[in-house]
Length: 210
Image (cartoon, rainbow, N blue to C red; front, side, top):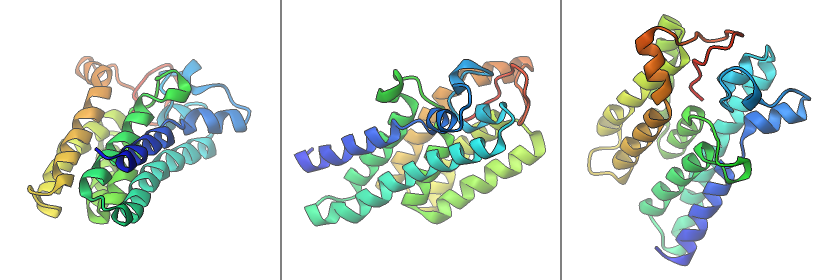
């Protein structure tokens, strides 16, 4: 990896480390989302506070940073003789930053919104397929984590047909899916035991997927 490519990747990681759940909550005078509900710094947990605007801003912030990291790298990389590999590494870095943020003790969210933002940067149709899958599942089961898990499983399938199995982005989508699924291990256990909470619940349940 060249020095320039490394700089792109580090910048993407630092951008990903901006936890909008924590930032938005602090700016709006709310409790730290890590101190209530599931303790997950994500939009679903912020929604448990009853502040819908805060949850929306968190969702948008986490999604936009994923898109910005990929879009900026895709725009600038060719000027330095860099290609898809650098774009893919930056995409992976911004997601890792969200999940393990250096600014917040390496305790971050579960990556769904940021992953969708990354997908928008890679391919709009791939991102729309993921969003529609999540919305359909959320409407049917009303469990955010289950919707995210199903979407993660299907994203590599969509990528196979949309970007092709030979594309660097196909392998990236597999890695993104594995990372998000890894962050949902506790949710999988709760789904199996019927303890997972539903979207919008204000109780102490932890059916988050952000």
